[in-house]
Length: 346
Image 1 (cartoon, helix red, strand yellow):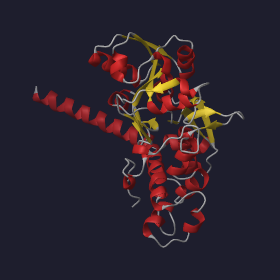
Image 2 (cartoon, rainbow, N blue to C red):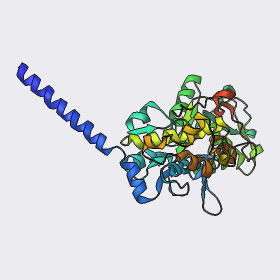
Image 3 (cartoon, rainbow, N blue to C red):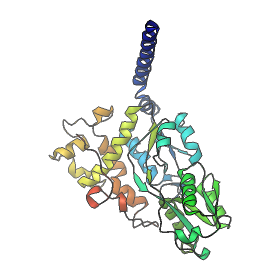
Image 4 (tube, one colour):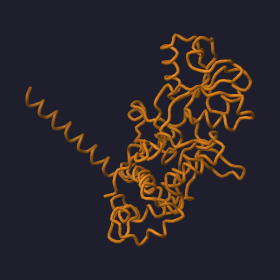
């Protein structure tokens, strides 16, 4: 009996070793296909102004869109070498697992089940958010406790974390809420505007986006309570650790550039810097930042000069000079009391 046990253990060990070697040989395949193709395919939202939408010229624009462009600049040296693939929330895991997209940058919350069941690798959080609820002002409630006293038809996006969060909240408050789900934000807003939904629940950023772009923003109220944590960020298939590393260090590079005061307008002033930290971030001189990832050592020079640093991306699409007027809040640098903290380039 012991002989067969030892044999079984050896067979299992060989299978595990073979599996590990196969995974190692497969590492970098997404990077290779992006380089062979000459463009990156990125799954995005197209119905969430500020994060992912198409402008009048048909161009994809938004905070999440620019994260795609930053990664394309890192891999290919060209932020415009991206093919954008519009996806509903429910389509995300299938598109990622099936190889339809190289990466996903579409207001996606990092959760335990997604991290494991999707076969995905989540990059650093690019936007710290939380779930909220929006109602019409004339509905007559001003906070969550008042809403809990009402019989409400609550609308949310199908295939998202909002369904579980709002169900947990309703159960906690013993609220009489009926949940209706839709495939995208446009369908929800149509139902909400038509009176089929008394309330609309989503990430607060999504509610701010929809309120600001509605026909009459003053007619809507976002309740003050935040009912969940929603760390949003880019996602890639788990099968390519190298590509996941490129995404990770591109995002951290955007944050590090802001920390160092380097942006798309002044980056030329830093190209002969003798500061060691700046040299490592930009891959200057003998610094080999990109070599660790199999890409150009000066990949962050391409990223910053073409897309900007984190602050530029945020302000361009969401900041005080936009219709959304968002302050940085928890999305400020850690040195400013926020949660953005990049691992060091060394």
